Every structure is written in structure tokens, then in C-alpha cells.
Length: 464
Ligand SMILES: [Zn+2]
Ligand SMILES: [Zn+2]
Image (tube, rainbow, N blue to C red):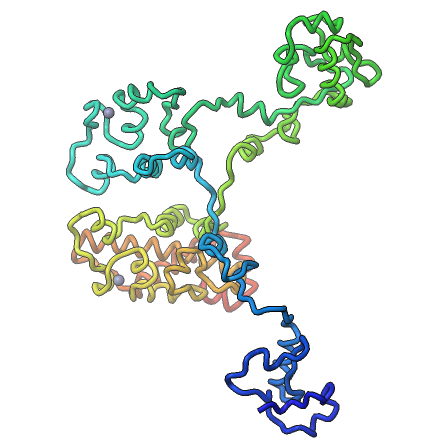
């Protein structure tokens, strides 16, 4: 039932046509409301009708229907495109190319991957999980079996690795970072160092690597010195005159090559040696490190675990919580340790990181005392989205401190209950303990304290 008059232009006489909000029907296709490439709906003055028209005015009409994912047509979409839109890309670890080279044998690469991640069940790890095994390496009998020993220190392994086509590092640290073959500091550094030649340059013309990071003598045969009417100890300034390079006009092919090189080297006022764009003399270690290292992306929970005001022992524990590396009962059982699986705090749930730190009723009771509400979703929690985005910065800082203190207290209480049957502090007492710890820390943070005192409600919650 089309109630829109096709001849009714711009609703000049809105009272004249039958009043229904959209003059449509439930099964209407979008094309029913398109005419000559424009949206065509009732000119009703109903507030919803106006809202629909406002919406439609922003929807362009294309030649054909398409459903897109990002900018790709849904029908031509690949799984990898979907995955790349959804996932947070992570930085490739240093060993990526070592473990997954172009020519790989899957079973070898998978094992090497476990080696790099140190996830094989070596004896040192077994013992860390309280398994009763001897600790010596079965290959050499003298050392202690660990990833480091087994794959880069054991004499047995070293003998095998000697047969590699290129020497392999003997440092487990370098090995596990993926720096398995030679890349000496020198070759690494040279690519970042730049020489700027000054008018009165004291660089050795033939021996310093001021052009292309190599001495001229390494780029040309020694005869070039006499061809260019120079001498071995010549400084660069010897070949500079009035701010221009001055060398022999010889037609020798090497002389022409040197002149071509020099024409690309500008002459500055003074000599400088630069690292990247920084003067070497003013360079800081962190600048060097930042040029060499592959920066990694900060995990979402970074600011939660390491806020400005932190108590180291709380933050370290929270860090382990976020990385799910505490020895909770679900993990112990995964390592075939014979322990009951129930949570000792509530006795009903199964102990895991998710349960212990965001689902257990005991924990939920403690977390209720946070100055700002804390998410109850472990997924959000472990991604670092612990509070509402709208919470002020000061409140966030206090909440992060509270969470760290609470997790620490909860883990401590859990351990106490596991090891001493009779022990049990009520959630109420624990919450007060956490609040006291937070308050004591806050009283030592002058800047934070000042902004807390600006907000009487917050002051009453956290300081009293
Ligand atoms: Zn060994
Ligand atoms: Zn529980």
C-alpha cells in the first residue's frame, strides 16, 4: 500500500495525504523506497519519520547491492582479510625467521618453536612443577637439564652444532632472541654511523670510513693514491680547497670513480660523526638502543600493571596474573600434578586465573570495594579494560592500585588456605586490608593526593 504520492513534491501539502509514519509495509525491499536513484519516503512530520529521512539522506545509493567487509566485497573476502581486521597485530619475535624459514620441515620447525618459547618439558621445568625427577642432563651427565643447557651449552650439543655451515652463537640469550649467526656489533653499528666532512677535516682521506661507511682504500686498489697525487696519510682537508673537493683530473677509471663519489659528499663547516641524526658526542644509550631494537607493542594491560603509582610486589603479581603464569590448580592439573581442582576461596568453582581473579564470589566481594566499578569479564580484565572508559585519570590510577593490591591479597589468602587447612580470612576483612594498603600507598603520593583532595566524594571513598 503505497501512500506516498509520487507527484507530491517536497511535501508542500503534508496534510493532504493519509497520515502513516512511513507508508511502507513490513516486507518492503529497499528498492520500494528508491525512485530514480533517490530515497523516496513519506513526508510525514512525525519525529521518527524525520529521523528516518535524516538517516536515509546519509546513505548513498549505488548501482548494485553490496555487502562489504572493510572495503572488500563480502563475496570476494578471504579468511586472512577478516582475521587481519579483527586481530591486534603483534610484532614478530626475533626468532621468527629462524623458526619459520622459507625452507622448513614442519616437525623440525614446531620443535624449534617450542625450544625458543622454552616450553619443552625439560627436567628443570619438571622440578619447578614439583615433579620428582633427577636434574642432570642425560646427554653429558654433568650439566643440569634446561633449555639453555640442552640447546646451547651441553658439550654434546656443541659438538653437533659445530658442523653447521656457519658458526652458531654459543650464548643461549642470543640464540633465544634469534641472533643465531654472526652479526657483530661492528657491522650492526656501522650501518648507523655517518661521517660529515668539515672544511678543515681531520679525517684520514684514505683510511677513515667517511664515504659509504668504508675507507676509500677498501674501495679502490692502493695505486689510486699516486694516481690522485695524494699520499697515504693525507687528511680529507688536503683535498678540500675553498669549500670544494680538489683532486687530480686524471682520466684513470678509478680516479673518475673517486671524483664521482666525492661529488656526492657535501662539505660541512666542521667534522661530525653522527648516529642516525644525532651527534655521536651527545648520544645517549637509549637512543642507540631504540635504533637497533625492534620495538614491541605494549600489551593492553600495560598501564594497569605498571601505573605511575605502583607497589612493586603488587605489580609483579598482577603482571603474572595478566600473563596467567601463576601456578593455579587448573595449570597444575594440566601438568599432571595430583591436586584437587576446586577453588579454596569459594569451594564451589574450579580454580583458574579467570575464576580466581574475576569470577569467584570471594573476589567479587573484595573488588566491590574498588573506588570505581571493575569489569566482571575476565576477557576484558585480561585485556586491561578494567574500568569504564569515562572514569577520570585519577580514579583510574587509584583503581589500578586497588586491583593490584586486591590480586596480591587474594593470591596470598589462596596460598595460605592451600597450605594451612584451618586458615581463613573473610572477604570482608580482606577487603578492609586491601583498602588500608591502598590508602597507605596513596598517602605517599603527593601529586595524586592533591587531585584526590579536589574531589570530596573520591576523598571520602579512598582516604577515610
Ligand atoms: Zn648436557
Ligand atoms: Zn572461588
